[in-house]
Amino acid sequence: MAKRVILTVDDEPLIVRLVQVNLLKAGYTVLTASDGLEAMQLLRKADPLPDLILLDGIMPYMDGFEMLMQIKTDEKLKAIPVVMLSARSRDADILEAEQRGAICYLPKPVNPTDLLNTIHEQIGPAEYN
Image 1 (cartoon, rainbow, N blue to C red):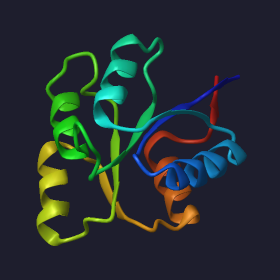
Image 2 (image 1 turned 45 degrees about the vertical axis):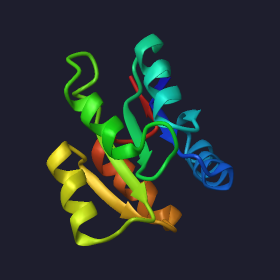
Image 3 (image 1 turned 90 degrees about the horizontal axis):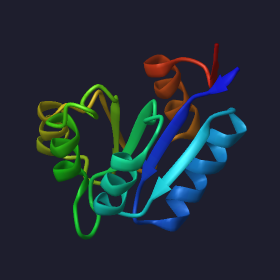
């Protein structure tokens, strides 16, 4: 059985590690990037593409909202579901993420159970045939 792959993009190492540990325990394969530029470079080389992207809104070099726009306008990447994880939780931020194509917006700090439930709802269990 193959494992589903999740790309976590966040500039806070502690957040990346907490998400990574929870996803690994749940059986997912985890790729990480610390900003939007690094993540876009990883996506352009990825084979296979990740099954889902967890994306922070506030990062240096390229923030999550700009990266989301780039993903959703790229023919190769636009079908990948994106879940925003951000400390920016104003209604305007949530609306912007939805308008740019995010399937869900989870405010930080995110509850690990809520995160895993959201991922499972979007892409299913960690392993597939």
